[in-house]
Length: 363
Ligand code: UD1
Ligand code: UDP
Image 1: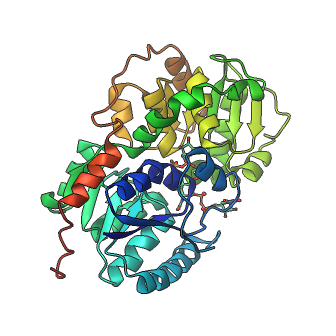
Image 2: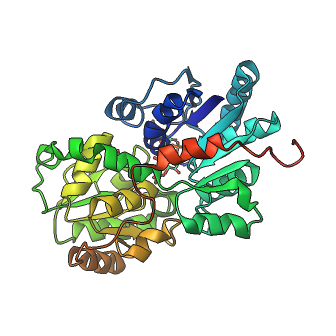
């Protein structure tokens, strides 16, 4: 099949790392279209080199903007691309604005949409990602799910069972493919940290960064944490943290630029605990055996809570510190969720081999 795989933002790149080679090995004419939602070298290029991802065939230069501007620009560019290239199907991954744009543009051209990482739900419509997931899933002809719960969510939304394929977690496959190489790096030493004696943190979700009171609580929890906090910071978060006096010389908090994928795996593996609001890091920490504290009102990655790798806390100083104490004393003996293994990309290939049921009305 002629397949166009859409990527745009940091977590997308990691998901297509194992996927594109598997599709090509299976004989598909698979190409990447990069919308350009993320464009800084440390938000985009570094993942292509670290994960040896094939160069995108098309780079659409969409850039930053409000949700409508970014999604609209991506739709316009993708529509033109799909009309010219006539793919048999379009694959979208995850839940970012580029995912939504790809699903909408393809659906309107009657091109079947395949969604990888379908069915995750936070049940929180204030999250832009929840809106993107819901729409992408309603438009998709094939749903490739990371967990059995994700399939149940789709069934509850009246998605036909024959469209749902439990393929497992492609982020987990990526971790397993790169963990050994990453472990050879002394990433923490490079930042003056000692293995097992620091906390790794990332914060970028609007529910935390765009609420000064919550961000202030997070900043003071980091300042009072029992170990130094290494904080590779998303470009949107840096100026917002600076407004709370958190910068390059804040005691106990080491703010650094975003790091590449292999360094990030090494940093996660060597940390005593992780504090994050990232979706992907909740999954990776579960795979790497490092206890995680998620600072959010809810999570679509509930399975990581269930297995005992993760705990959810509100953005309140005392809650974060309590969660951290719990994580630091945890036994790290949880079991990885089902199908969080090396075979997710192969299961995607098998699902596609079974054929895509056409979208309703287009059979
Ligand atoms: C996006 C995703 C989010 C994901 C995150 C991963 C949506 C709605 N959100 O959020 O789900 O968790 O990516 O990192 O798609 N910026 C740069 N350089 C870049 C990219 C962005 O400086 O290369 C800055 C710009 O100021 C931009 C801001 O970050 O306005 C936000 O970027 P955007 O892609 O809109 O959303 P993210 O917050 O990155
Ligand atoms: N990541 C990275 N460097 C960083 C921060 C994150 O390589 O400085 C990786 C992280 O390991 C995971 C992915 O980026 O693989 C997650 O992206 P992010 O947290 O930006 O988005 P989310 O998963 O929350 O949508």
